[in-house]
Amino acid sequence: RGRLSGSVHREDLTKKDVTPSHWDLTKGQLVQLNQTDTEYQSVEQSFKVSLGRNIKKIERIQNASLYAQYQTKKEQMDQNKASTNNSNEMRLYHGTDAVTIQNIAAQGFNRSFAGKNATAYGRGVYFA
Image 1 (cartoon, rainbow, N blue to C red):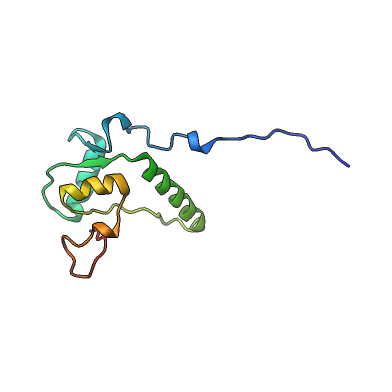
Image 2: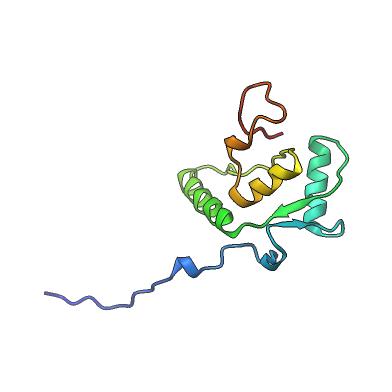
């Protein structure tokens, strides 16, 4: 019988920092972006082209566990779609009240939050 030689690389993915490098998790889950930030300007430009409305403020949701779930699902979808050059991501907008924003930041989008606004097509989570 032959012997195998080589090394095994193990990586503890539970300790891997998966959040974007520009996130500061010490600031909480909702971070108001400054108008001079490139992230703010990118979202502002895209929003104005899409909807043409005035912007009061732009906040980023920083939830590490939700982001990890998102990255896992994105990687799975990217693998399933590897044969095409189409992106699995789109920039979408969702309007809601201040209380629901806190729920979304903590738990993600959930149909149980639905039913307050724009329910012409039934209960659900709507994006523009």
